[in-house]
Amino acid sequence: MNDYDEVAGLLGADGPFAREVPNFAPRAAQQAMARAVAEAIEQREVLVAEAGTGTGKTFAYLVPAMLSGKRVIVSTGTKALQDQLYFRDLPRVMAVLDARVKASLLKGRANYLCLYRLDQTVREGTFTSKDEARQLAIVRAWSARTRRGDRMELAEVPEESPLWPRVTSTPDNCLGSECPFFDDCHVFRARREAADADVVVVNHHLLFADLALKQEGFGEILPGAHAFILDEAHQVPELAGQFFSVSVSARQLDELGKDALTEGGTVTGATSVLLEPCEALHKSVRELRLAMDRLPQRGAFDAALRHDAVHESLAALRRTLGDLADVLAGQAERSRGLANVHERAEALCGRLERIDEHTGAGEVRWYETTARTFTLHATPLDLATPMQALREAAQAAWIHTSATLSVAGDFGHFCGQLGLVDPVEMSLESPFDYTRQALCYLPPDLPEPRSEDFTAKVVEAVLPVLEASNGRAFLLFTSHRALQRAAELLSDRVPWPLFVQGRAPRHQLLEDFRHSGHGVLLGAASFWEGVDVAGEALSVVVIDKLPFAAPDDPVLQARLEAMDQAGVNPFMGWQVPTAVIALKQGAGRLIRDVHDRGVLVLCDPRLRTKGYGKLFLASLPPMPRTTALADVQAFFG
Image (cartoon, rainbow, N blue to C red; front, side):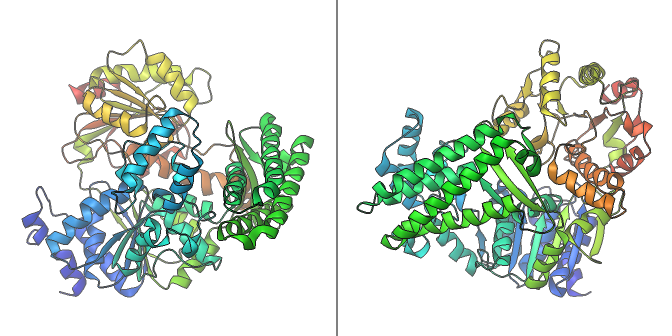
């Protein structure tokens, strides 16, 4: 038996986990993955491991990571999973292995209270509402007793509160070692702990923000590692694209002006010099947003510039931003805070110039707007090249794992996006008995998804399923418009509690759904993944359409055009594989436990009428399929 087999054996029937962890069930797939992860870490290999739901992939990578004696970075898809891993899974594995491993939790700086920004906000004493003033009092009291300064500790202040941006820092406005509160800084304390740790738990946003910074030569947030383990790795291509993008937002520009005036207030005579250019910048930002009012919410930057008002407003914005940068240059030596604001102004000038004048090769320029703000982007079409460069620079093991990485068993799409050449690949089937636990129902006679009455017909087809299951269902939609239409149609036709995305925070909807016992939850995008409802509360998952990416996405359009010019079929080469992985995520909400039973309802007739439909069905777990409602009723009967 080699060392890798010994690692796998710890998760076997005679190992410590079987003895000490309640309800632990030895699984051959989990042991195989642990063996592969141990080997990948030791040999600094690239591993792509698709582990079906219920495999136990968390223990399968944590055990070899802890026993490796190497520094390992574990990155998760969300902050919630990050907290679960650090506060629940890691301590459990450490206790069973009796491992003397130093572990650390590290999040992005926006998750930590900034004592300097808190002090500034208290001194300013200006609030948009009484609620915000009350929340500030709560934050001040908490600041005196918290050790970590992690926002997660303070449930009394909602995550979406406008107070948080005022009392947390950004890479732009942080004063670093020259901050008067540096010795007590929560961000730098967390980083120092991470630098000394053997296992560091981060999330993908922080990981790629750091890797992108290192690529640009500004230094590093994360300590160098022997191995990177990326859980929920199916999210990595999209997130990596965000962090290799160059962006300028109305919020960044407005905050620059506000911070310039705040810092100016600490230096005699600076405010009088800065007031006019800061007000001019704020006015330019507002006028550009107004000029973009007639545009679609997102689109190609070139199309926006064809509108004279947008073209002129953007030119005015560049002038006023440049003027503010010039004025700040004359004030920068008067305080560290003013020097920092000057550096930010210069950096924003450079980014805006790059986007406006298209100085980056192989990029697509685009914009997006919301009710009050806008963001301009330049996004690279090729992620494979920068990702390859990062891996070569790190000289580390890279382990990618998720329940959804392949298309009908083929990892080509995922590997191609990240530039993975000949990685070690493994596909581990779920231990769940899908042939017994699940049924896939394809309702007959539904119209094409483009039909005006499609959502109404979906609701009609789903109602008898809900009657058979007595509610207990997720209805997942590919658009918010369809979701709202279905909510209207169901509101007075079902006897069960109805939970609709947007009417309450996501975590609250899920909590209420679980406790309702027979609820029906309607969700879009964020409910397709990362949602775990085991047991009888969820017995039906309905998916209205195949989740093809929105055709108005300017980055997607540019990518598809580039593929077409290269002689690759963009539909089969990109759109279908991406939609297959998204469908697998949605379908994965159904069976979360060996005791779960449920019906997956797929309402898109293209699964049966189009050739590519077979690829979607072949990528789903091996559950029996039917077009007969009677089979669904018998399943629940």
